Length: 245
Ligand SMILES: [Zn+2]
Image (tube, rainbow, N blue to C red):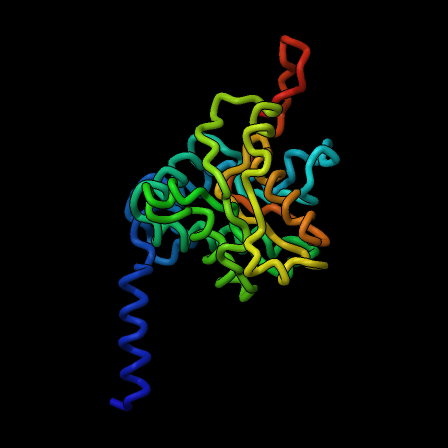
């Protein structure tokens, strides 16, 4: 065997150990038929609530980002996949979800200059060991052959759980909690930056990140995510601002 061939063969083996061939459905765990793409079995692929439109399109003037590109409507199917991504199996899941994100971005008429991930605070990183948005951004960028800058944004303070908070509370909780890393600040002016997150619900986090990027000179910020909420608004009984579900 030629030395070069040996290297490429052992390199492939090492890669296969990190990113195994698709064997199990990333949603239901069933064994996949050969050739099933994106790690989804036929049943889950058919039932997945694919939804490529921007659910916030009618009130985008409220957000600092310019576009939102989801793959699916966030619900029980997307939740199962995201739970898998957060709890174990991260490489296998991130490879497959990253491929779906790459395919979604390829539908866009305006490709970004650079991909970045919504950051998590270091206390969260210490607990989980990784940030799922970073894994997805890295995988999508690899599939698209686009640059991805790890650490472009940093989370400067932990914000705790925002699950029960309404839009206004979320915004004040998030205020000044993101910053551009000074090491990479030169990469931003005049650029179209695509911000990657796993799930977008109210858009508050993506909005806070986009504000920071625009403040650092980004020309455009688009958001790419796996699941997004329906964007349906339910009026608050206290006459406060609407909340998005
Ligand atoms: Zn399945």
